Length: 363
Image (cartoon, rainbow, N blue to C red; front, side):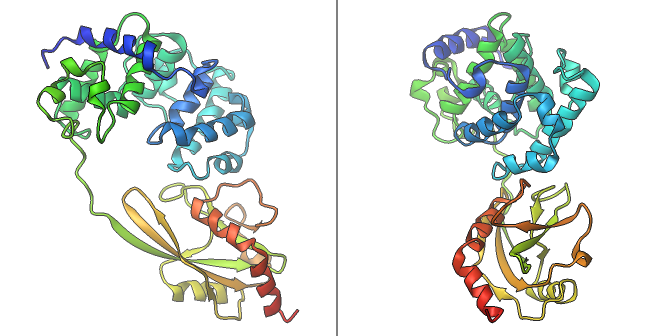
């Protein structure tokens, strides 16, 4: 265990946060467990500037946990579309249902009950209780982890169990007995605005004088990054099946994997397989028309989507209850769509495409 003075960290952070911290974020107003929980889940692996508009729209539609629990999952995913990491949205909905069914619609007031909810781990549970109730629980989200690893010189990667244990012990020792909510917000803010991953602003940091990483010039080495995976590239061919009324066939993706639980175009690994599906399952008689490719970046790979446009008669034979639907791109239903599919549909809604489609019909 590092020998540095853990007692010095909290006072310096609290003083800095009072002067320079963030105090006007949407979830800092009326800090109810529901509002803080929602913000903590949205902020996982996502920056504040990106989260704020999603948070405000989400809260407007689902002002409390009962409203969220009562909503169809598709509507929840619809409001989450574009925010990424969709398992977060599915877990939010599952947790809301459990809160209503098992806790009478009241957010659990204890750590065990909070941590048992889907999508909530040790750090998130501690943050919710610290920020809303002032209870003394340490946190170790990405921002707090970075601050502590640099300040105390903890060199292990986030996947190293021994080093993670050391960081939790440090988080426990550094968390003060009083002003816990302020401290929790302060360490998250410092990691998000000053002790950032790249190019940390050490000259503005209230912990600079005691920071081991700064004293040894290792700010860019700590915390140790995860081993970088070779970035891959994948290609997908998606069938854009246009019905006579302008509806488009969608299929629900499995919950596991990319875009889990969202509605997407039928996807194939080759153009030949996509064309065979259009011919055999949709009764298409024309050769699919290739539309402009779409590029989408995921965490570890880039995806090139080639849309293949075909006309077909809307038929119930295509439908699989709960797994497929005909989607009106001009009067869209509130369902979750991947961001590149939303982009494609905006292009499909262009009048020129429909004119071309009508010409193909000989009209």
